[in-house]
Image (cartoon, rainbow over all chains, first blue to last red; front, side, top):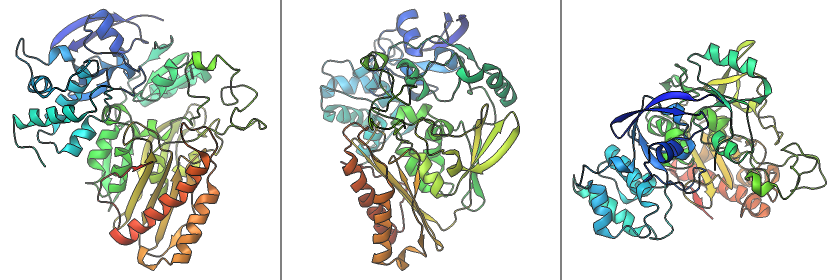
Amino acid sequence: MPVQLIQLDVNGTLYSLSVKPNQTLLEVLREQLGLTGTKEGCSTGSCGACTVQVDGRAVLSCTLLAVAVEGLKIVTIEGVAAGQQLHPVQQAFVEQGAIQCGFCTPGMVMAAKALLEGNPEPSVDEIKTGLDGNLCRCTGYVKIITAVQAASQQTGKSKA
Amino acid sequence: MHLPRFEYRRPPTLAAVLEELQQGGPGTHLLAGGTDLLIRMKQRVVTPALVIDLGAVKDLNTIRGNAQTGLYLGAMIPLYQLVAEAGQRGYPVLAQAALAVASTPLRNQATIGGNLLQDSRCWYYNQSAPWKQSRPACYKAGGEICYVVKQKQECYAVYRGDLAPVLVALQASVILAGPRGERTIPLAEIFSGKADRPHNLADGEVLVGVEVPPAAGIKGEYLKLAHRQAVDFPLAAVAGVAGEQGCRLVLGALGPAPLVLPPLAGSPEMWTAAEIDRTLTAARRIVQTVRNVAHGDPAYRRKMAGVLTRRLLVKLQDEGGNAGAVNPVRC
């Protein structure tokens, strides 16, 4: 299986990579770029731990071929904070106690970030829909939803 | 889980896709959003020698029209776009069905064509290679025996797509491109009724688009029964589209294909209790449920066919159909 030379735009940096067609974006991010913040949970598109943004949309990197996302803007959890300044979603997760073991958290943050960028004032139902691809075994989701509400209130009012 | 090895092509045109498909032969699979195929490949349910990615082909993701003119949907339109636009274009029931599929990130990747052409599913078939090592291959996988109905050399896998029942109820057609040219046939006719090979596209054919007839003044509803509000395939589902002429009802996830019920004549307020009862009886009789769905007792799913159909008909009578919100019914 021949390798392909591709360029991936990840967190604003263009990487030239030699990848095989059967490598998922998740594998390339973790194993070739060392960006291990994106997690492998189920590997079958059901848990959301591998969520990243591609052209602003939350997608599951375990079900995306790396060769298929050349030329698209990829953002991982490592690209969310601005240096030492946490993103409002990250800050809210910390302040609201929305993190226990932390394994689902990168995926949750990416899904929440994508949600708020498309809908800055989501209702609780819209938050639940926006995060419906992300499982958490620890928290029971209540604090996560509260954190997303808190993050959205930083930029505007939240719907009831 | 790691994907198996395969040759990969990403042709820029439909003509190039058709040529690659022709040359690739039987071990070739088309890749759309990847949310079905790549998972099955990781499980080694399928191991194509050649994967042809449709992502670079222009004109497969065109959407145009509305309920007055009819709707055209390119096969590569992602489901999130269908959720966003179908309601505005006068087909809220289509948005409702699209919103019922999987989850937000999966809808950002998955496509209409991929959802329609998803393979049938079975507890014994859709498992990883290590899981399936404990027994010989099932009938759908090329073995001698179906583990669900052991006496029969027949497959009982379930077609569990969410879009197909609604599009069949809307009397949609599909445009297929192949080595012999292009053809347009009713969507209902691409389902073979055979669970081991649920679609009867000709070799080398590609689903290019879906045409939905005008639907001005028509109300519709899609009810999906699933374990959870997201991610899960339906345990049972019903789509209903009603106008002045009558109501078309299609069951989902209750057999090897969408199951079309006898239509109800006239507008919803004209339906009698006896007519509704006959429809519910037909719903319970037509389903083909067996014990091959996780935590989905076949008798329960059969019963739910009637329950969901009754709820849908009552909803069409009382409320005139959905306002675009999805209401998956919890178990």
